[in-house]
Image 1 (spheres, rainbow, N blue to C red):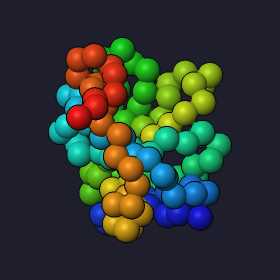
Image 2 (image 1 turned 180 degrees about the vertical axis):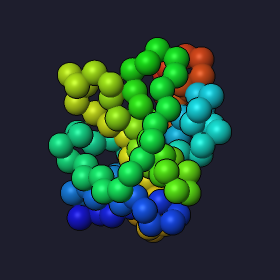
Image 3 (image 1 turned 90 degrees about the horizontal axis):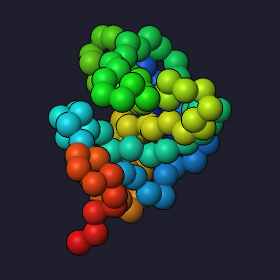
Length: 116
């Protein structure tokens, strides 16, 4: 079990396994929040605590944040048919997200993986 929490501890997330790969996206919201995303099925993520959310653009996901400290915790799909959500791994212990391979994604322009 891998746990994550916001800065103030009001929101906790639990997932079954630590991520092998995390995604750094350069879209307008991810570049501002600094999210480093690991993807799971919604059924694999347990969220405790109150969040509010932000919806923008093509309105396909909700970006959740702690109502107390404002840390971005995760994103969830608006369409229940989408069987994927993102967890901000920067809220996990540092040794977990620093051990993962970083995949860079161009969410700003091409919607393709960025290769060096």
